[in-house]
Image (cartoon, rainbow over all chains, first blue to last red):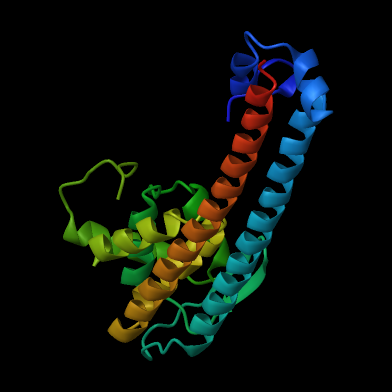
Length: 156
Length: 79
């Protein structure tokens, strides 16, 4: 909603054109500022309820994700493990991703360049177990499939 | 498969309370999951979108109703 002068909604300013604020006070026993405050109070209460619902949805989502991480079955040949830090705590994904899965994930986020750690890439690289050369190997494998690309900084 | 994962990420993008890190995890899980699990994930997040839209509408309706009350008070003051 657009805000007018002194934080009042813009439509109120328009609405009071041609009317006197004194009449509002006389009839309703409420000044314009009080009426606006009352409106804002209802708005804040509604926002609080909405935020509570959103928080509940957020918790459900995290629970679902944790459960999915616990129950997903991975093929034996998927050796890498993924451990990501989220703002809501640490989630461990058992097993992990294959090379192809990693590359696909990076492509979805579209910020992976050879030798360049973008936000999503840095997140993934940091998450891979130390000493696992999975990213570099993944690039080499991709290059064999795409020999036309000569510039290593091209998007993959 | 990439298109399918992108579609899944588009679903996640409709939920403002899900962080980028959580989306990354959800996408990675989606990729490694079998078909039935993927279906379950899509249904779960689509339900979340519907619930979120419902709560957002409730909020907007309450604010609209309060706005009408205030507007009426101001209009009633016209003599």
